[in-house]
Image 1 (cartoon, helix red, strand yellow):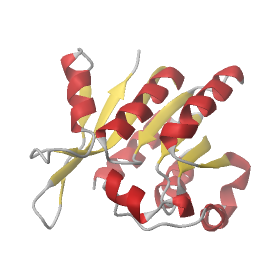
Image 2 (spheres, helix red, strand yellow):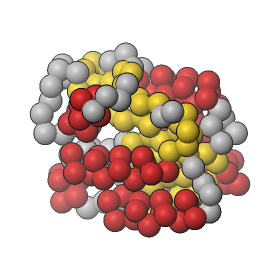
Image 3 (cartoon, helix red, strand yellow):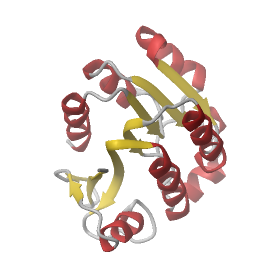
Image 4 (cartoon, one colour):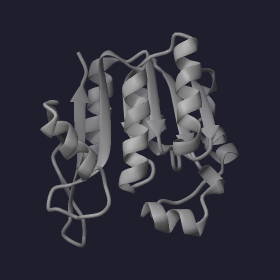
Length: 187
């Protein structure tokens, strides 16, 4: 349900450039590409995700190789750029490269690592490369207070700083957690 709100947002915005941090299997990328004519940029560890990193980042997603995701996105190759690496390591340099090339993003979806440190780092880079009237969307806002992971701490800090945040309808997981998307529009 919450991903449907992301796709509806993309269809409404019709962004020129989309950045997804945390591509996983590429399913969200395909859905975003289907409803827009945007150039899509994706960052993920892909097959470099180790069990140790997955535990540290509280990630439970299936891992696909960059090559397998690239093949899956075959119909959209002319609009897709994929980058393999830890977002905390590669996003600062990529962000500067994109700025140097005049690339700003109208939609940035942060859905990579789930530790506060990684989400905060991803957000700090995203804030530098978001276009005027662009939207940064965070996944994994836990409505009923799952402490220690997800984007709650970063989003709550933004709310306290005066940013307007909108939330998607929640998905209720089997364990009772209510997970939402949190969106910030920049002006």
